Image (tube, rainbow, N blue to C red):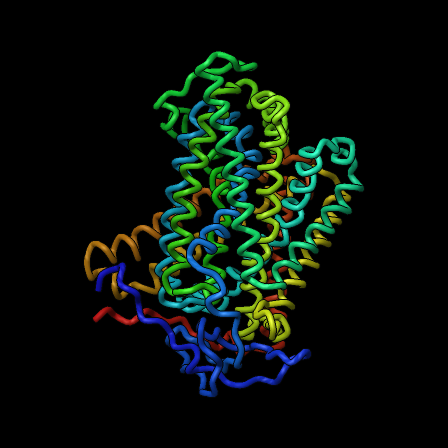
Length: 539
């Protein structure tokens, strides 16, 4: 069977059983996912040992066919927050690799594309909104699956507050309210309000969220294109206000700055690409769930590649390496300075791009965490209450508000410690990203292991590609841990327990995940009776 032929999907509706109605007339889900477009019907659970759940699944499902391919693509793009990600990484990236920043963005695309391919093929076999959690459980077992799901949930907790804070800050700058943007208490209050508003939109319905995201992605990309075009025009016209340098093809060589610099640059690049899988988390709510979400994830990375390389060329050419490297610690604020340099009185265009980028990502980052919690609860890896689905809107309301509450508390506590602590919290994100992406790539090769020798297509797309992507991410994970161990590399530049704050945050979250997993297993061991399986051999 060719690798691009849809693998057999699990008939989840046939394994569904009724569950007691939850408050409000909806049904609480506690077993395996009901396939998009199907209603839960009475049945029996699938036997253990084949990678399918042992616990019975209830009736009820997310709203099927709520969005299409283009909607999923917009959500995947917005979840990466392109303008904000560029603003956050371009200064530190140039400080590491100089003019080779576009090449490093190109190199960072490679592991992302390989892992996106793994997401695509695993989703065809199991269109589950829990993505990594469900797939890793089926291929590698419940413990690995639980930790993968926990990592996804915690990325939402870590980043939602930071994104909302950036959206508020750049939004205020865009309308000329610089004084309010510099007021910490005002920004904190507005950030909390924004988080609650974005969560409310998520609960209101996936269609509403998709329409909102479509507008934001168009606005964001348009603003970035205008900025990049003006910057390049001024470089060639000789009217730039900084130490401009004309672009060269050699900038696409990621190895030009040397090995250690490349490693650090790739870590930043992986962060910039992260988030595209939000499209796949909506698989049960997307038309053609076995194919469209995975294709949207892959195309998201391709569109991001073009955007990142083009804007990186424009920024480095206009500003020069000395200007950007000198503002590496300013992170996203470098775009506020560049906006004035490039666009003058029209600087609000770029400020608006970053604000809409962070605003869109605030909403879309809630999606993976809430859907993963839903999937975990259906499999009884979490309490059944997390799987509550709003009967009228078909959205995971309880899981969404839990993620919102946790992320809000985390933001307020860390923000009160310091602005630098908030940046350290965001830095810790890269460890969780590399962890669950690598797990997914490994799970793809393990799940399809019987098909790898069926030809070069299956071997490369189902096995070698995902494993190479995972190996690259594991390498980056190890390098990142070593880097974060040095307190001098943290934004706060202070030691927590003798090491850098980002590493402490990441280890704390990992330890908390292990403890909660053990507590859940003691309370209800049904999920841990599942056994890993393997995809059937292709006919």
